[in-house]
Amino acid sequence: MSGELHVRNLGKSYRQWGGELRRIASWFSRSVAPREEHWVLRNIDFSVRAGEAIGIIGQNGAGKSTLLKLVTGTTQPTEGEVCMSGRVAAILELGMGFNPDMTGRQNAFHSAGLMGYNHADIERVMPEIESFAEIGDYFDQPVRTYSSGMQMRVAFSVATAFRPDLLIVDEALSVGDSYFQHKSFDRIRQFREEGVSIIFVSHSLSDVRTLCDRVILMDKGLMLRDGPPDEVVDYYNALVAEKENAKLTVEQRREKNGWLMTRSGSGEARVSDLRMVDAATSAELAVVRVGQQVELQLAVTVHRDLPRLVLGYMIRDKQGHVIWGSNTWHTRQVLESPRAGETIRFRLPFTCNFGPGSYSVSPALVSSDTHLSDNYEWVDNLLVFDVINVDRDFFIGSSCLDARFVIEREHEQAI
Image (cartoon, rainbow, N blue to C red; front, side, top):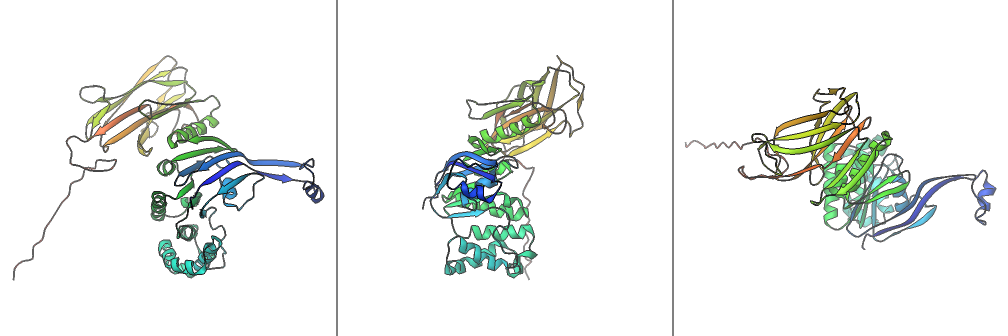
């Protein structure tokens, strides 16, 4: 089976009829309307191709979990349809479908049975389920004695014991220890490499960037964006700030080098220049050597009297992972009372110990340790530079560690 999914004009409303007779009358006449109607999801249209990984992001209450319940059939839509091919495995609300008085093993049999597998198939994979969950003797204890992390271990192990055509994962993976989260993501990545279609809902935007081919942004039950991960995630970050600051504007454009620049802010202070230079010669750099002494130089123009100004930097790799970030709030270098018309210059000298690759610098001008209170300007990927390894021993990864192997050999003394 292919694992394709097509969602067409999907919507969900909760209705109050004001009486049972009125509700029954609505079955026979469309003119009978509910007393109150609250739409939590509406006009949802998207498709997931075979082998495609889709991320769904949005703030709490955006409708993400409701959408997944409609897709999996645990809730029926008010309008629209869901067309799916292939076998589906879903991990939604933590412990959903588990009987607290049954053991983990019994719940595993029950859950896998509901997924359509027969007793012999479940019996065959049960040792793997037990081994992957790694909860020891608790596997044969009632689920009511489990922690939330243990419930997630069993639920994930059951859902992924058989290779599905479509895997749906909600926020459940945010529960539990980091060891099992890494183990779970390894399995999800393995499924993706094997051509399994994936719908992934998470507040961890770095995980969404890494795992997904496309990202859907939802807000108040509607789809706002459907596009490349960097574009949608950066827009979402700007949108969150915009909701906190009514004066903000958001601008996006794709540069010739392929990087997406997203600019948001009130404009009360703006970056007028940002460059990377060699610390010794001040020559501007587009390519940096591993271990080179460099300096970020930034100029800010203040357009309005401000109570204070904080500069923050975030440096990310091509996949969107944050390599380093800090701001002058955390370094106790807040600039007090900048005045309109001032130009302020910041310098950040550092040793470039990044691994070979392409990196971006995102500056933020704010008033405190966060952009949610006063976002004067935030620009994702304003400066892009490459790092090459010219004179260091070969290594892989995003960091050049100050590390050397120490080798000691011991020889047995002859008797």
